[in-house]
Image 1 (cartoon, each protein chain N blue to C red):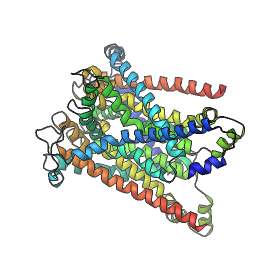
Image 2 (image 1 turned 180 degrees about the vertical axis):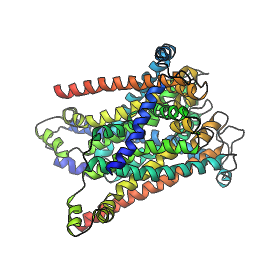
Image 3 (image 1 turned 90 degrees about the horizontal axis):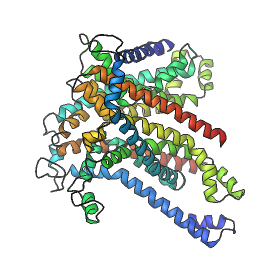
Length: 265
Length: 288
């Protein structure tokens, strides 16, 4: 078994090595072309920043939507718990692309949502939802909501209800009990959820491609197009690395912030 | 009923106003939660609904007329049947291989201390914490590196899928292994079973639920994956790639039919599981 583990470790290491090298690959020669990185960065920093902004907004939206839902399922759904959990994961059972395409139907110009919004003058007579930032962010939020809800549910579900009773006995109001007991105890779930949402959201290109226009293009769209359409492998690979590196740095900062908060709190 | 019990149980200190506020708070939470569930369900309903639509033109955006036509002739669209078959093929093969390997890796990580154990742990988590596009492109970089021997196609998709399913298998099986009572294995050995028999008769059956869960998860992930597959597929079309292709022109209702079909199978399995757990919970409560 040990032998097996090592045997399958090697290709993985090899893969990591290869992907590292490929970032410096001007077509089929290896020449330490570091300028790939700076070129990629100066050419596509708009999309990079946009990716993180969209991912950030979507992650926050997910948190706002998912936390009360997870809380409700964990504490209020009673015997229906498992059924509602199934509801949370149900979107996973519909192919990613198809469920994103469903938003095309829902937000379509002739669709009911746009019509209502036009009637109440939230949107102008020619206003649309498709091909806007809103559509892209809403799509990302939708697609990654389960990733946020499940870890929060798990952390809430593990909570010992006697702790809440204890805080009530100590004269905590329900708001206080929530802020001082429930919320801190569910922090691991929130942390896991934000990571599970933010990381894939930052690299996503399907929502931007289907629900947006090139004006909403994210870094994933660029990487994808570079690899498969313009066959510009070095730029694509270095962009992949920039994306991964930025995420790593953000992770470290995040870990530090969350960690120090825990220490002081 | 619960409210009555809780009102009685609550200390008499709570004023009417605070009780009223609590009542509102409780129900607004329920309403909010149900709205979020509605948001989650909405596109699914739309997908299923539009699988019964008889579109007027090429675009299946506006509801026109109810029909079973699309379900009966689900494979009337060129290429869709092949794509679905390819998806199932890849998913089945990749799941079997990844589940077997993942289980062994999990056993190795939990049971043995070996050089590079920490590194293995990190490597397992890496694919899960990397955006798909980065993983897909790194694999593509690897495959492109050796274009003479490696042809993008079925086997590159297979390798890619095994790569990302393995991580999920390891994590799932790991969770089960950590709570595993090793005394059971020791007992089997004491009773004269050799290592292989112990593994077969004790370890494997106990791990079976986790392995099964991991396998199902892997299968679902594989069928659903687009990004990694798309980058490494070459000319091969799986179902998501087929959808991507038609999404640029016009999506036929048959795509909704296939998606609804996959959904219904999965949800049936899920409901069966919920029901089974419910029954199990009931019987243990009744039994004791």
